[in-house]
Image 1: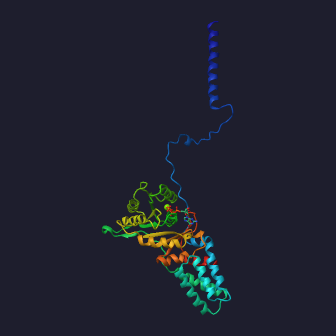
Image 2: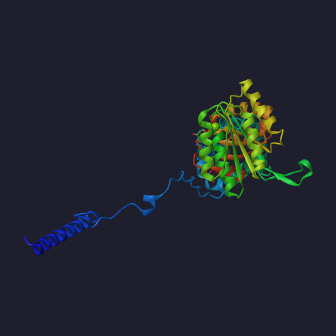
Image 3: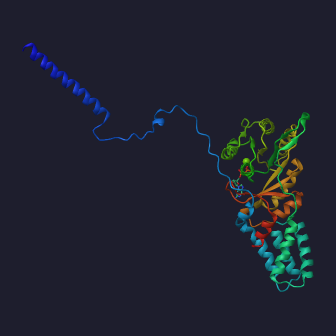
Length: 374
Ligand SMILES: Nc1nc2c(ncn2[C@@H]2O[C@H](COP(=O)(O)OP(=O)(O)OP(=O)(O)O)[C@@H](O)[C@H]2O)c(=O)[nH]1
Ligand SMILES: [Mg+2]
């Protein structure tokens, strides 16, 4: 083989190597199975570590007129109104009939005192009216029930910031709301729902998880807070609930919040030690300033037992408003009347379901109309 042949052979071999390598490269880029779509977004493929995204804050339902919108949930309580209307429209309205009226009221948890008062007034007015056609009776009953509920009572929640004259400065401090009640009445749920109401109203809200008894309690509150963007002040598990409450109020003031809502642990009203502890929670908060609202949460389905609870709590923490929960699950709406009478404290909010927007400012007219099935 002369030199020229050798050069030609080497050149051809070189060409094969180059072409082969080129084809191999192309082959690797484009597999034989045809075009491939890379489903990974380029950023995802290269994204650096990112902490968990913050929870999405929910859109909130308007608060005004909420009880009217949720009125159908009061269907259970309608038995009271329709029962009364039926009795009052009877042909003969003798003593026995009036006793039945009393029975209906007592059975619906109206309570003995308010029942007597209502029956007396109705007797007088029915006698005075002369005629008893359904419209007249209904109008009378509506008026008297409404008078008993108290249409003009101030039911507003003190949740606006409060002028703070401390140290001669003209600042404001957050309104402080303490939520109390026996186990399972709906305290935490109410704090969560109320936070939504306030946030929807444009307030900034800080939550205090002063229920340090149950490990899950602070988490439950946190879930509510996250949904509306309200931070939660927590303490160590089984820690001192009064100090968590104190911290929450302090951080609320330092952070310039409008409202601090403090959730507390459920406790039985007959457990003296626990009730004393609740008194301490309030006193410790008051070292920084007054508590503006003490909301007692009562489960409407527990009836007269709720009144016993109410009395004891009122003695320990001087309640300023009642939240009557689970009114959607009872035929005994009369508890509204009884508890106000018992404590001389208005029902300010009612729970009408388990949904996040099922807490409504109490509206006496809507309530009485719902009782009468209007
Ligand atoms: N149907 C109905 N259920 C309610 C209402 N309010 C609260 N609940 C339910 O009652 C149950 C207890 O509610 P919580 O808020 O955990 O009660 P709590 O008072 O904080 O309980 P403890 O912290 O254990 O004392 C939950 O299942 C709530 O969904 C209401 O207005 N209607
Ligand atoms: Mg709770």
